[in-house]
Length: 227
Image (cartoon, rainbow, N blue to C red; front, side, top):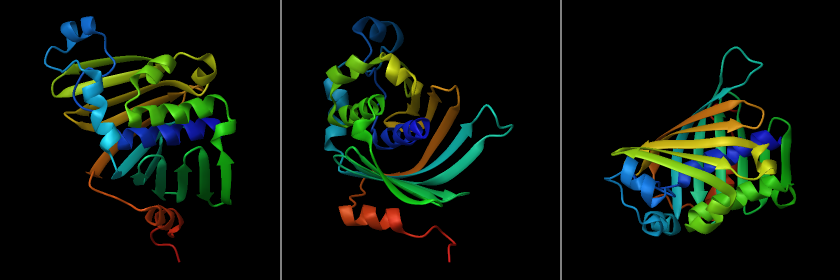
């Protein structure tokens, strides 16, 4: 469950992060050598994160699991409401939904509905907090928990995050987000067990302003085609 939680939350942050084509978290030396055309002011680059009110985006996720010959492909949609509410719905092939509310996580699937307190999960709590650091543009806290490297050849960029803490490293091997301009396009997550998830994003709507009631309705809505 912890590894699955990690994949869900990593997908969430990539969907709401308005990552610009710039050297996020890169040192000035690396900026000069690898990304001359990219701005070097980290706080300015992260400023849009704090302004995000809501985002809606479609996703396709391929999970490459060591024990399976073919990847598991999930398709669905994500709704985000600042500062800390998000619903991720898988609509096919097997419907499920996850609703993140601060450190509370509500899961709805074929087994029913259950609530988890992520705040009590140690490293998982750090993972959730890290996403909030991104949304707030808190570079200091991010650098405390991750080694981050970004390469940029405008308009293409690639950001790699590796946990510093061994406990967090058991959940997350690395997270790589790549995109074009100010749009994240692909995210790769390597979990602590060696399984890999690749998520592609499409039809992003940055003008979506869902209310809390909208997120709950989206979370509880029947799957497409359900009777």
